[in-house]
Amino acid sequence: MVVDNIELKPGERVDDLIINNLKLIQHPDEFCFSLDAVLLAHFASLRPGGTAVDLGAGTGVAGLLLLARGAQAVTGIEISADMADMACRSACLNKLEDRLSIIHGDLRRIKELLPGGHYELIVSNPPYRSVGGGYISPNDRVAMARHEVTANLTEVVAAAKYLVKYRGRFAMVHLPERLAEITLAMCQAGIEPKRLQLVYPASNKKPNMVLIEGVRGAKPGLDVLPPLIVYTNNGCYSEEIMKFYRQDR
Image 1 (cartoon, helix red, strand yellow):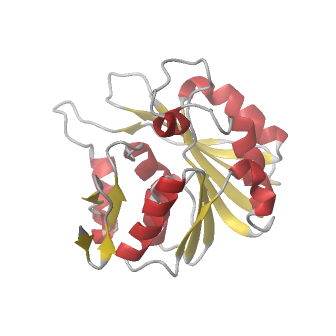
Image 2: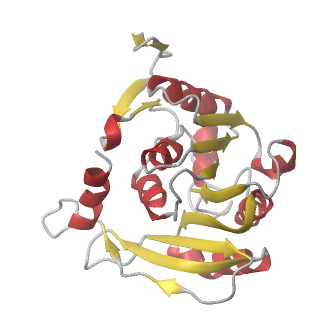
């Protein structure tokens, strides 16, 4: 099957991101993006015309959304060859191949892939759970996306430290239950946590995601933002979430 001169492989589909008419190639047997990638791309502090790297890019959704927000260029690092290939073709499908580059590689070997201290913003939606923390999918590629099978939290932060400029930013979405571990890893890497926001599925639920951003070389001082509620009591997206989809159209 061919869509806008881009060939789709068996089983693949094209999903509408709604924002800026962007399209994304995905496969149901792979790890498909969810709201956390959208939240991360909108939470990160981005200078218009800036450069960014997405560690663990998956099918490229965060990179596409950062471009929609005004990034000049985004480079994604993805260890899965199939996911990296889908991300490359999604860039072409959106005619953004000159601004979204996808590297098939292991972030643990980041020094072999990209220059250090060169980028203004690093983002990551890494595997949330350590190996041994909950059910691991028998699908190896889904398991890599959900559990720290290939790279753990410390290794993700280390890669971000290597890439980011002095006074540059590193933003990540993760689990609230690992917040102490996250802040410790960032501080030990010289990336001072500066912004934090808890994400609640509903106003009467506990938070299920945390958005955190640090600045390399900054002084201590954390700004805790108001809670972000995803769904209203009637099950619709909240006004805060709907703004993400309106502002980029």
